Image (cartoon, helix red, strand yellow):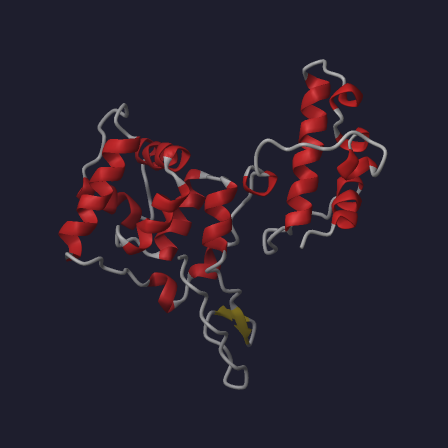
Length: 222
């Protein structure tokens, strides 16, 4: 249940952004409405006539025109992934092979390449796309290929990179970082699997101390 009092509070006084904290839905909705208001000003529009920000019911309260969003503000507000170290644990490093093994995984990646990279110079094959996800250091052209893919891929097919493409959660997160992808629907999904590293004697580690119960595993996306 959304707390619209918080949405109004965050509209006027947004919390400071931090790389180690996931914004709440209330924050994202407030950011979206603030962006709509600011965009209206920039294009020479009239926020009052359009019922934006304090001139609409969501921020301005009762008696104002009903605030209407034609898209999901939570999934259209740009987000940064959590720190990459939060996927540096064994389960996130695991590559899950689909039925059919590596050939099937390469087939899935080849299908993604054909569907979303058809006009890209030197469009990668399935094995080549797998190699791009495996590589910690990408050339600018390879980075551009992954950025293009993340800009075009649908969210359900992105989720299936893990189960059908044999790409680990860590490799997916690293690729998002490398390409500076901030698509909220992709980042919100990958952030579900992040684990804050524990600190033992001042050294970050994803292995919990002996006296700390291990965290329950994150559920897989349906």
